[in-house]
Picture 1 (cartoon, rainbow, N blue to C red):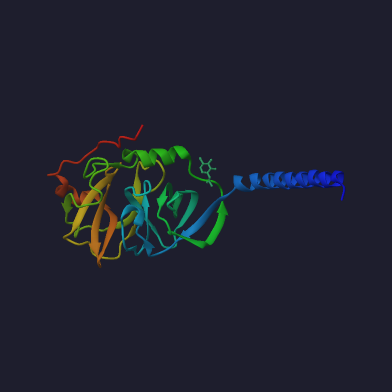
Picture 2: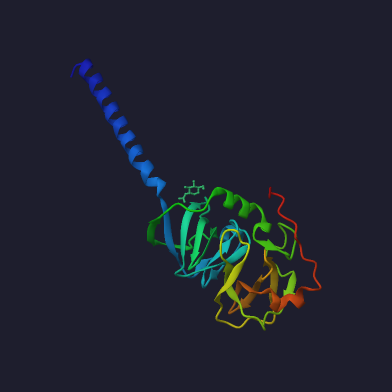
Length: 243
Ligand SMILES: *[C@@H]1O[C@H](CO)[C@@H](O)[C@H](O)[C@H]1NC(C)=O
């Protein structure tokens, strides 16, 4: 092999590599333009270790306003979710689909059954994501504690035993209103329950309540516990990072 043919061969192989590379790009761009994926949600999703939570969420995955954020509902096993983005710790941002109700929020690492992947249109914008994650007033009012405090401890004791609990309330990404959906199939405990916040329209109250050794985060109609909130100072400060 002469030096000339060797260098010619090198030029050719660079050209081939470049063509392959450009070919891949040309192929990849149209693919990723339609690249959102939808998955069904698992039952028995692990509580997020990244947020110092341990154990299992029997009915599905918490829906939250950010990784380690406030619980905003439960994506029940068999409901579906369009992934827009996945954080380095495995939290998924995207569209929660619950029949006619659908909105952008987060679900937990390992919430999705990856074997159920189907492709769907891109969904959920970065402005919804930033607003939801940075501003708790984007979805809630009358919190039990100031921003970045409380962390799910019981600050405002409530007895929800006369109420019906629901896993879900919010209907769309405005979080302006909702409808009570997915009733829980157990009686709510008179003891060991705490109020966390109300929906923006103050119709739904997010509470924690124990059942069968597990802490459930569910909605009750706020009217059902309204009189019990009367003696408490509730907090409407926004997060410092809201802007
Ligand atoms: C995620 O949201 C961004 C910002 O709106 C958008 O540009 C992108 O196409 C979305 N991606 C998917 C996979 O939904």
